[in-house]
Image 1 (cartoon, one colour):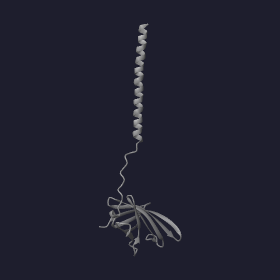
Image 2 (cartoon, helix red, strand yellow; image 1 turned 90 degrees about the vertical axis):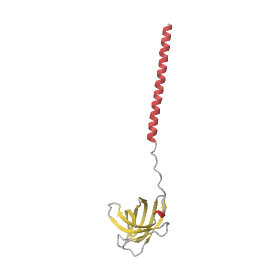
Image 3 (tube, helix red, strand yellow; image 1 turned 30 degrees about the vertical axis):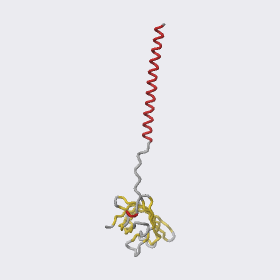
Image 4 (cartoon, helix red, strand yellow; image 1 turned 135 degrees about the horizontal axis):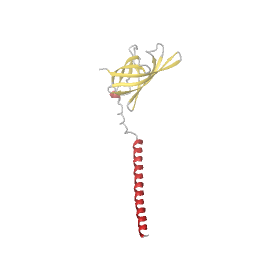
Length: 168
């Protein structure tokens, strides 16, 4: 009977040790799964914010090309004059006698530009108002613009891509 009792105690002790290892193993596995899930759920390291744009970085004369965003056809080329502050910005089309004033403001890494209404160079007899956003990328001025045309009381909109190189 003594042997039976000792045998049963030894079996029970071994079972407790194996259960402890199984429980620890299950905890370790759950921990690894949680760690892997947490790693997947973490957002990627954020890219640094672009440096704020300074109007002085854009000061000068730019040769601009406006292309239709839908088909990349060139709509017009013109010269844009930019200054180190918000005054003195304008665009000059080859077919216009006078420059058109641009109203500008800076928002982070972008310059927001508005002009018009003025007589369109692209549509005879139409008045146009433009709203654009541009940025300086690798010494090139790039951006988008929306041109709203009014002809005989009706309005149409064209989405435009802007590209500019600084005149030397």
